Amino acid sequence: MNESNDTNANAGNNGARMQSVDQIIKPRWLIPIDDDATVLENHAVAIAGERIAAVDSCAAIDARYRTANTITITLADHALMPGFINAHTHAPMTLLRGYADDLPLMEWLAEHIWPAESKWVDAEYVEVGADLALAEMIRGGTTCFNDMYFFPDIVAARAEAAGMRACVGMIVLDAPTVWAQDADEYIGKGLELMDAVRHSPLITTAFAPHAPYTVSDQPLERIRTLADELECGVHTHVHETAREVEESIERHGMRPLQRLEQLGLLGPRLVAVHLTQLLPDEIDLVVERGVKVAHCPQSNLKLASGICPVARLTAAGASVAIGTDGASSNNDLDMLSEMQTASLLAKGASGNPAALPAHAALRAATMGGAEALGLAHLTGAIAAGKQADLAAIDLSAPATQPLYHPLSQIAYSAARDQVTDVWVGGRRLLENRRLTTLDEAEIVRRAAEWSRRIAGNS
Image 1: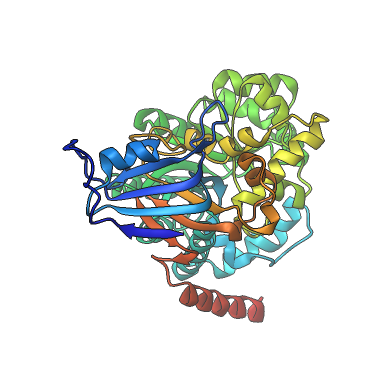
Image 2 (image 1 turned 90 degrees about the vertical axis):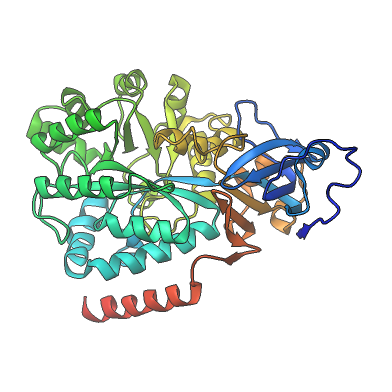
């Protein structure tokens, strides 16, 4: 990796008009994420402030943009791509990583996770857990995440302090928790948060009713009305397990997706997480309504919840994004690994080795997430005018050699420790594998304190 300020940058331009930019990044391969599986060589990205000013050949960028004050970063062995967008997670649950493993979903939730959260979750817990998640995600090349958890105001504040982009869920449940006592209070606090972050360049919000089985009709109807009025997204778990579907039929006389349709919640603003239990007509309904799918394959596999029919969804035209879920059910926030699992699972489940190929998997993990969160105009691809949310992956490691196709090596071979540099809005949050906005040692120390506290008093 080479980085320099060129004090002679204007020499030899024959008086050509130069445009000043702050950074120029010159990778070995540039992966813009478009519809044609493009991989560019001898290309560079010019960054002015927080946005991408241009993507062009190195010669053209140097001729037009490189001035005496421009920092030029040469990544001789790297692929530069949009940062990953984690379309569904519960960031503070890093503090329950490994707390209760090898259990089915409802036993895991009702007998272990919910009791632990009831006992331990408070503002400090959320702060420490969120910081641990942010450090892990940035180190793995993630530049944006879609969160759902208690104390979302703290998650928003920690993400903004770290310089990371986030869509923070305004969580809603029927049951009382340390965050709110009833659905009205959850919604009221969520609206306060939405107002508080409305001018943030990094933080957006979405209504986050936990699931159809934990939120009754009246608050769901109110969320639909508010989401329409405020043009706000909605983020919920749905059709995660067969048991969830069976209980919905017993309780409501219909499947959860049908219930959400009757309540008017199925539409382009809805991010439906998991969808492991879909009938053919439900796949058609998801596509018809423009619902965004957040696919969390590793969590679904670990909890034996089921398999989202990604091959059938994408073939039908659904928009699919990839999320890790929380670290307590995954057990990591590694989007490279998640993307690899998503691609392999789609092939194995469908019997089609061409299902979710390398480029489609990369797109789902980047632009797919941006589309799900309503941020496609800002991020998810490398293009002029978009935010400079970028990740550099060193492909010189033995695990990614020999290198015939950069897309394939990233999709099937690369590991997160090969991510060396990360930018969000032009700000370098990871520099040569070193976090620049977070104190990693202090985060690990505080997380260890919480681990001892929980383990010693559970």
